[in-house]
Length: 173
Image 1: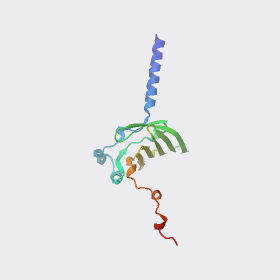
Image 2 (image 1 turned 90 degrees about the vertical axis):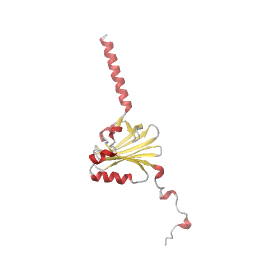
Image 3 (image 1 turned 180 degrees about the vertical axis):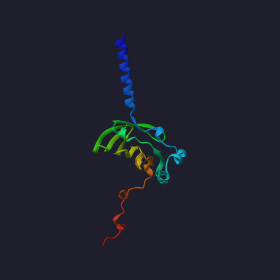
Image 4 (image 1 turned 120 degrees about the vertical axis):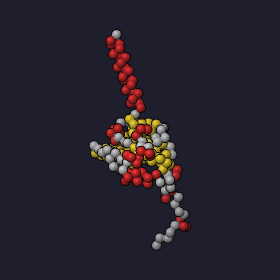
């Protein structure tokens, strides 16, 4: 009887562990976002100014100060929660290590998209793209990150996308 109970207990722990792993490590979770009313109390003026300037960009839907834990980027599965509360899984494809504390994490979003995240010590920056939205993690020092939701359709076209016809190009002598 004890053996059967011990086996069931071990099986239960294994299933619980698999469930926790399937959930992924949270890169940015809902409670990691700092709401705007709290910004004036928790962020210094320089950081608030940077956040305010980012928010002025017409392609920026949302910009929020966030907590990002660089240590979890060793995981093969990440859970990313968007500012609107949508959870997406990001599976690691590979890691390119430059130094023990400097590497690039490449991943694929389960619902379609990609992620490239750079880590240097405790500083993280990069992006996660899902459909026509890019989520950028911008770093402004240790434990100073801003998550920016960018509407890619509002970015200007690249200059090379529509080159000027040769007849209207400036003369080069």
